[in-house]
Amino acid sequence: MASPAQTITTLLEPAFAALSEGSDPMLRPSSRPGFDFQVNGSIALAKKLGRRPQEIATLVTSGVELKEVCDSVEVTPQGFVNLRMDDNFLASCVSEVAADPRLGVETAANPLTVVVDYSSPNVAKEMHAGILRTTVIGDCLCLLLEHVGHRVIRENHVGDWGTQFGMLIEYLLDLGEAEGAHELSVGDLDGFYRRARAAFDASPDMQERSRRRVVALQSGDPETLRLWGILVDESVVYFEDVYAKLGVKLTRADIVGESFYNPTLAQVVAELDEKGLLVESDGAKCVFVDGWTSREGEPLPLIVQKSDGGYGYATTDLATLRDRFGRLGADLAVYVVGAPQAQHFAMCFAVAAEAGWLPSLERAVHVAFGSVLGADRKMFKSRAGATFKLVDLLDEAVQRAGDAVSARSLELGEAERASVARMVGIGAVKYADLSTDRLRDYVFDLDRMVSFDGNTGPYLQYARVRCLSIFRRAGLDPADYLGGELTIQVGHPAERDLALALTGFGAATSAAVESWSPHKLCAYLYDLAGLYTTFFENCPVLKAPDEETKSSRLALCALSAAVLGQGLSLLGIESPERM
Ligand code: ARG
Image (cartoon, rainbow, N blue to C red; front, side, top):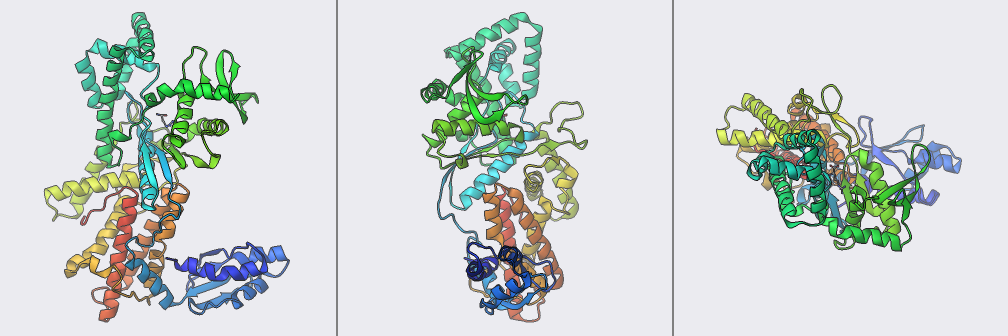
C-alpha cells in the first residue's frame, strides 16, 4: 500500500530521471499553510544542469499528470514546488489504511534471521540504570523487527564468567549457601558484591582461597561449578523479577551467557592462528586490526588470549559472532550495548570479518546508546552514592502513576486502578527512554516521565483513551469503523492533517527499524496525538452535521486509537482502556 508521499514521489520520479538519471524529487512535508508537500529536488538538479531552479521546477511538474492526486501545484520563484493533495485522493489513502489490519505497515520483502543481543546484566551485580536502556531499546527493536516479518532470536548475554567468581564463591561459602542465595535472590546484588570485595581486600587468606577457586572453576571442578551455579541461578531469579516488572519479553530460555562460549574459545584462537592472524605481544596472543591505533599512534591489538592462558571479553565476543553466523544462521547480528563499548565491537567485527566468521561488516551492528543521568547531569547515582536499583525506580514510577491516576479518575475500582498505574508508570519510564535519540544522554526525571503533558508515555496513552471514550459514551464499537466498510472523507483542515498523519504510520515504523531508532516512532506518535487533539477540538464527532460526516469522523477516531495502540505496543508499552 503506497502512502500519499510515496504515490506522488513515484509520479514525479520519471520526470526527474528524464532530466538526469538518479535525481531525487525530495518530497518533504510542507510548512506552508494550505499545502501538504514541498518538492525540493529541482534546486539540486538545476545546479547540476547549470539551469535556473524555477525553470526545472516548471519542467518537471508540467510533464507529470498530478491532477488525480493534487488540486493545487505552485512553483515558487526559488524553484520549490508546493503541493496540496486532492481531498478525494487523501480520503482514499486513509480509507485504505483503515481497511488494512496492519495499518499500512508493510512486511519485509526479504525476511531475515536477526540475533539481538540485549540486556545482558552481570551476575551478582546490581541491575543499574544502564541496563534499563539496553533492555528497553533491545526489546522494542525485537518487537519492531518481528512486526515487519523478520525472525528474531533474542540473546541475553549475561556476564556469568570471569575471575571475580573465585572471590564471590568463597564469600558465598563464608556466608553459608542458604544465606548467600537468599541475599542474591531478593536482589541485594550490589550489597553481596561489595561485602565480598571488602572481605577479599581485608584477608590474605580469602585472596589465596579465591585464587585457588578460580583455577578450580576454570578446570571444571564439579563442586565449584555447583557453587557458581547458585550464584548464577539466584541472580537470574532476580533478573526475571525485573523483566516481569518491566514487561519485557526476555525469558530464562533467552539467556546465553558468557560461560556458554567457554568450550569454543580455544577453537576460536586456534582458527585465528590457522588463518595467520595471531601475533604474540608480551606473551599475549593478539590480532592487530587495520586502522586501529592507540592514542600514542601505536597499532592497537585485540587481545584474544592473555599471557596466563586466560581468555577475555573480546575472545568471547568473537565466539558470539562465530556462533551466531554459524550455528544460528543469522543474517544480521545486533548488539544493543552502551556507547563506551563502540571500539570493542568495531574491533571484534573487523577481526570476525577477517576470520571469515562474519560474512561482511554490514551484517553486524552495534546499536549504541548514551547514559542515564541524575538531576545533576552526572551518572545516575542515589544520594548515598551507590548506583540506583532499577527495581526501586520502577516501583516509584508505578506509585507516582498510581497517585496521578487516582487524582484524575475517581471511578476506577481498586484492581483496575492498580493495573492502570502499572501500565502508566512502566510505560512512562520506557517511553522516556525510547523517545530520546538513543545516542544522547538523558536525565532520569520521574516527575517529567509520569506527566500527562508533553512528549510522555502517559500523554500518548491518554490520547488513545480519549479516542476510545467517544465510542464508550455513544455505546459504539470502534472495531465497526475499521476494516474497510467505510470511506473516510476529509474536509476540515484539522481533518486533513490528521488523515495525512494516519497514512504515515508505515513509513514511521520502517524508519524506526531501519535506523535502529525507536525515537522516530515516538516522534511520529507524539505528532499524531497532537493532530488528533486539534481535530477533536475543531471537528464535532457525535454532533457532526450529518450521518456521513459522523461515521467518517468516528472512523478517524477509531483509526487514531488503533495506530496509537499499535505504535505503543511496538514500543513495548501497554495501553489502558480507561485512565
Ligand atoms: N555484560 C556486559 C556489560 O555489562 C554487556 C554484554 C553485552 N553483550 C556482548 N555480547 N558483549 O558490559
